[in-house]
Length: 418
Length: 105
Image (tube, rainbow over all chains, first blue to last red; front, top):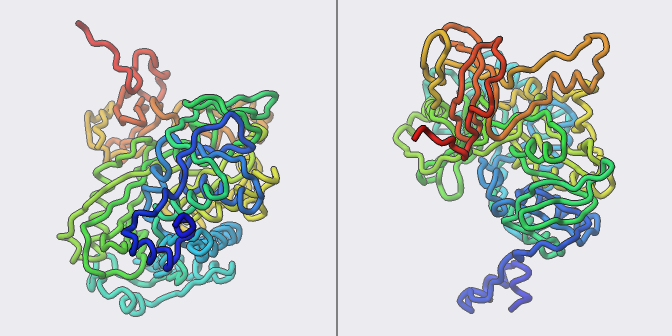
């Protein structure tokens, strides 16, 4: 019975069904902190857990801890809209995000955990001539960089998304579809990585807040936590909106500003939308979850915030945008609303790499789009920490670019919202 | 929603304003001897505190004047509104989140 609980399969499910489902074991241990680890990861979200998994799986490290202040997946991993895509402009971005998308394509099998990755397509809309030109340019850039892209006429857009407003105030003039884009189940990604990392010996320590670092001669040698001091030579930080707080404990600043990003889920509806739809001009994107709820994301609340609440004007703008695209949704009720604190870089490109402190590495700056980067970010961050040298895919994402001026400005390039 | 007390127009809703980020940032000097690191720090690196933040706002859909706001980034409570040329208000007198100063008894 224990054997079946370890590996999930149709057979183990059938056996457990016959036994009344009493044999399932917890998917990971709730570990106690040890005094010393080879590596410590701060932040038990998708990126931290994925990094721990790849450190154990690819690089053979067994003595690793993941420290989480609250509970795993309780931060931005549980506060996003679960979109996966790689429709960026610059070659460096597409190379990385497409790598992450490819890892998503094999993730359920890799982790033996159904992350419910659904490649239902990700479609961006243009509502004016300049938007159409932007989409044509984006489609060409994506194809040149090796991602998949389809430029769609208004007729093709409407054939793919039947419910769209027939006479909108902002006419739909073109669409850009990435067929391999889609969504995944955010909790399953976190839990799948946690279970797989735990099986390889990683200690996942919840309710453990980092309060400081032991730093000697510019080299980190310990992490101070609410549950005691942990000695270690290498620390990886993946804490999204709170990156600046952790950096200041280590004595430096980051080129990050933290904002609240809101999202909403409606009451469940019958299946009516089978793609992810993004309309930058109306400031919203929407998809339908497997439970039937419309998952709606809005643009940033544009002033610095650590409040995981969000504000009413942004909510109103999102609702107006949705009703502009789909007037029939006007009577649908919001079921839940939440805000995640996102770490926005000046050029909307992340930082994965070294810091001024030796042995301290940061994985941050994903802004509004960290979820899609979880497998790729974890893989490349693990490589960076294990080798003390950035993985080639994230080498351009270094802090040094702010001094050299080699920014990767995706806010301008891909027109993304952050 | 924030209610921001514009120094010229009085209290107005947040949607009339636009936040310009951290205030009191000084361009490094002397101009011909600024290193790349100092310049990067000036352009891109920010305090980004969890708590009291000194920031610039503009009354975009009003008088279009810039001014400073001391605001808590956790509670969003506005502690002080002051003019662009004014120094930072005394932090001790602005109560940080969770440590409410005792009121007059």
